[in-house]
Image (cartoon, rainbow, N blue to C red):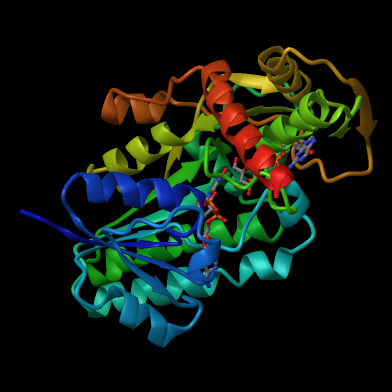
Length: 325
Ligand code: NAD
Ligand code: GDD
């Protein structure tokens, strides 16, 4: 039977991919985002597309009305450059999840998904670049990323209490840095994979010979290709996993290694300059996938080099099109 599914934040990167996947499976999908339609990363004509600010409680009731399942991907967020400088704005996204939960409770929603983040993890567990992988238990005692991470941690708990107290079925995944086509690659909210691709393409296409890297480049992360994020979201949504769970790659690389990968794809090398005053975030972060493998017999595994090839090609086309205008 066709399900009626709401994707909140579907004008953005992951929500746009998720809405495509859900509609392709024959569901009736409503997509909501606060950006004007012309700024959505993907617009799917076979979905019901609404422009609404979901900070507003009444708008959440309008969005949810008539739909049975809710995926909340809406948040004011970005990479380190954004979250370090916009903490209050990041925390205001608490209104989106709170009001969507209330509307879901009151309007008979059967399942609710919340997109949390690796930024909920205790900063003291992320001081070593050789991070062995963050286990779900490492979120407590709490010392989340200031602003954005605390909002995610609070909203996770709100989901849990709506399940315990009101019987709303909620599922929560902690995404580790997601990349791929249709992601933000400029403007200040971009994350490292897209930023590195853009900076190398600046060299390949426009002859720049220097790349500026934030920090010393030895900080580490793992990066998850967006298709696996979309797959994992649905596996978790329809599972019996009631606690927040990692959804991320465990292929950890340093930012210097990420730049090596991008330069190899481009066949173009740049002189590296390190900006030690730029936003750096934690020193080392990786996903421990023990729990997701136990529950689902599955974890993200797409090689970074393959995902970066696709991402690089997509960003290059966007930059060529912009330049030709
Ligand atoms: P994105 O910025 O591309 O998409 C989020 C969308 O939410 C945007 O289109 C934005 O306009 C919309 N939005 C923001 N405030 C809104 C509001 N008040 N009402 C309606 N829409 C609103 O981000 P993304 O990368 O697609 O991330 C999706 C979710 O996953 C977010 O909750 C994010 O925090 C989480 N997450 C993403 C990553 C990542 O690496 N991309 C990592 C961890 C967690
Ligand atoms: N964005 C960006 N741009 N980061 C750079 C750059 C650059 O040009 N150069 C080096 N970096 C470094 C940052 O300093 C940071 O140490 C590392 O690359 C990763 O940066 P981001 O990709 O911006 O963010 P993050 O991994 O610290 O956090 C992201 O992932 C979380 C989930 O794992 C953010 O997107 C969070 O919002 C998200 O929740």
